[in-house]
Each structure stands twice: as C-alpha cells, then as structure tokens.
Length: 286
Image (cartoon, rainbow, N blue to C red; front, side):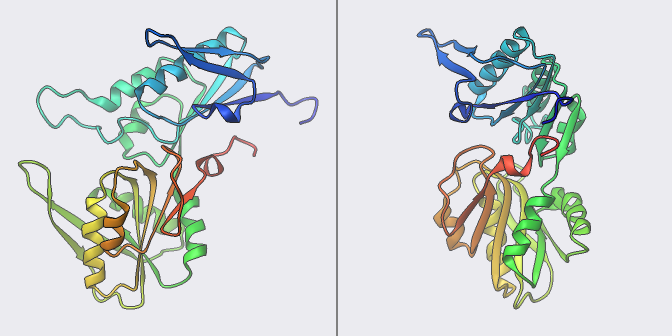
C-alpha cells in the first residue's frame, strides 16, 4: 500500500479466529450478544460475514454499530449466503415475505456496498440497496479444469434455466440439458423428475444449482441421468446447508460434489470438495 492509498480494514464474523485481537464477541447470561472493538479503526472497513443463524445477524449489527462509533465512515458487507433468499414469495395465507424482512434489516445498516454470492433469485438483488452480485461462473470454470472434457451442464429445474444458460454463454456455449420437477400441489413433494436429452454415454453431467438443502432434487435427477447412460454425475452447489444425507446422494449415482463453506465449515472428503468462499469473493483490488 502506498502513501496515497487509504487503509481498508477487514473483519471476519463469526470467524473471529481470523481477526487476531481486532474485536471480541461474547454473550451475557440473559442471552444478549455483545461486541467490543479492540484495535484502531480506519475510515473504511469490510465485514466478511457468514450467516450462521439469526443470532449471528445480531452480532453483525452490533459490530457495524461499534465500527461506526470508532470512526468507520464507509462499511462494505460481504455476505455470501443471503438468508431468506428461498422465501422470495408468499405461498400461503398468514406467511411473511421473509426475504424482504432480512433485506430491510440489512438496508437499515446503510452499508456502502453489499456483496452476495450466487443468490437464489433476482428478488434478492431487487430488494437490497447498493448490492453487488458475484455469480458462480468463476467457481464452475475452476471445476471444469478439474473435470476435463465431455462435460455437459444440467439445469435441475425450470427456475434455474436462465442462470444456467447465462453460465453456458460465459463458458463458450457449453451444452445444457434441461430438467423439470413435477410436484404434488398439495404438499410440494417431488413426485417425478423429467430430463430432456438423448443418450449421454461417455458424458460427465455437471448439475449446477445455488443451494443443496435436503438433496431430494439432486437424488432424483442423478437417477434419471444414470438411466441415460451418463458416465459421471457431478453436483456443484454454491451453498450447502449440511442437512442432506451424503450416502443417499452417493447411492443415487452422484460421483462427486463441489460446494463452498459459505454457510458451514464442512468436512471435505474425496466425495465432497469444499472451496473457500473468500477466495471466490475477495476484496476489491485483491
């Protein structure tokens, strides 16, 4: 950094072990969270925040307030997984529009910039102020270098088609296979999966999606791809909740999963490859 560049502090939350002695977090006996900034604060700061439940949002807001009181005038927020992104519509009477509630809370903090990674839908970016979206393109490009040739992209459902075709264009027109989920309208359960393609002998099918929750979508899709004689099935998801049964995913025909630690510090293995989210959304200028 030369003498004309301003110092830009970076704070990791809740990964406080990455901060040295910059600040500390603790909780009072009655349940309230508390934050204390211990180091000198510059006028510009970035909070690198991994959502870990709603209580972690309180820590985020407390740290934001503490930094401002110590002199930080511009604060950027990097929040790879945006909470409530899948609750982007009201499906039943009496429900909240959850994503708007979370977005309103973030907007109230008046961040200079809010950077998120591969959100579930465009609703998130429409609701957030000063938002910057980092797409999953760099992640997928890195995976393709590891997977080799004969790779096709698989869009897991109609809602993913726009994102997958955009990704394909960025990859030079990689072939895309579309799929649809047929659901029971009474309870939302998947009752059938259909894929639109011919024989896939010798191909590696790369299923790309933003999040893996229970994994049922990918289990049913992998079975169908194997019926089309696909040689390998690889799943790439930007955010992995950790609730899916890895054995069931493997038994369905999935050979390999790529994801990030945007939500949790997942135990990586030969089956589950975990990329560092902060290497995919670094500070500007890095």
